Length: 364
Image 1 (cartoon, one colour):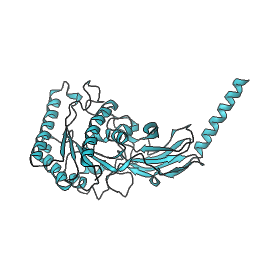
Image 2: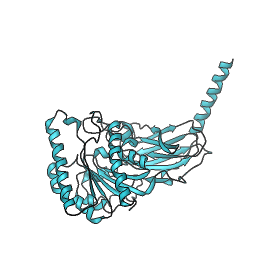
Image 3: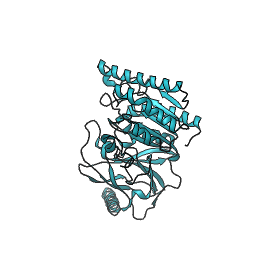
Image 4: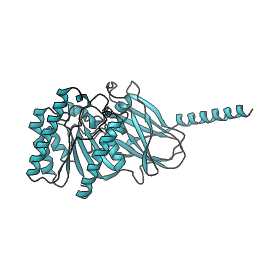
């Protein structure tokens, strides 16, 4: 009898929870706090507008519409969080999960730290709906919802219980007065993390509490001068340039010096950190790959040395040594990082960034 009663109670609770979720009250996410954007844009979830990318190559224009690093901050006392979202296209890349490509990733503040809460799993169509987290207590909690890394988020609604509060955080867990602007390759954009919050710029943002702008352009972070011109207009406490994987040796020779010097000249008050290309695991046995990576990093060292000799004291350098560990387990496909590699790279870059921001006096 007691067992039957317990099953009845559990069934009623499940029905009640399902009913509450079905009657969720939705709010457009643009009503809350948006972080991870270097410049204002007409479309909320793109990284750059068409006007800002007018002089960019077509590949960079397209990738600028990907929502990598963009996140929504809000707080609620709802017992569940449900989301509806739309993206621009459905194909996934073979070397990454659908969740990092087109899904959502939720973190919540717990005991003063950002703690993972759940994901919105995409489906093979443009529109998706998902309960991300359920059965929470009714205390007011702050959340950070990451947008897809390799897709363009075109619409996002956050659903809570009808009687619940949902609003902009009274004390945001990300300080937008300190902003790290990062420019780079697919590794920076987030390939091949398991989910959006595991891209290394996102990890750094959670650990520091600073706003981090992810301008990783997959296969297209090639230091075009037009990109440097746009970067120089952004509010930044530090610029991080981690783009060595993408340009060819000739492109580095041609573009590296004028690109970096433009940032240094236009923004003399802002430190610039150059990051060597992580040593490709695919070069463990492939001698040609290993040789190309060594030559790229050597060219970056030459450019750095030349600019330091010219008196640019705000220029700094981070070696690839130990960047993703020494056990050869940090990559998914020999080039793009897995979650272990991203955590290790985040730790190294974060240490350098925190030191430079502290020395330079913080926000710019």
